[in-house]
Image (tube, rainbow, N blue to C red):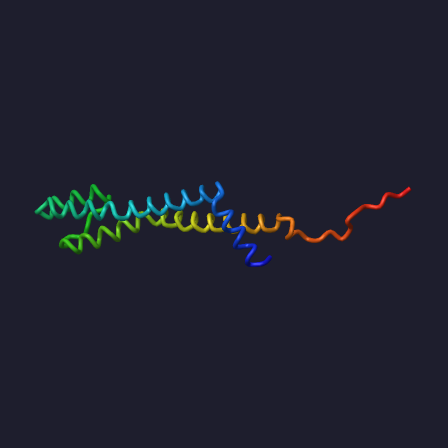
Length: 135
């Protein structure tokens, strides 16, 4: 298979409905993962700004993340702790995002290869063009 034919097929296949479905899944997976990581950080900033006592902050952060932060953390340290907790709880979404990206790339490349192999000028030559008829 020549690279030029493959790249031409790849350009055509990249606009197919299968590729579009893959693109949508990849974008949705990465967007969901990013939102689930950054949303708790935003809410933690709001909690730090709105609550002045440590006990109120601890209760609010526990309700946000499900775990209680270590005692004695200050504002920036609480934000870092929140980031670590959020990333830890979204590892499954990170795996889904990576796998969906890999599967989409494999599908698009596979479609380009099969499309390239099915074009008339790329088929293997026929050794026998006609079948002789025996009397």
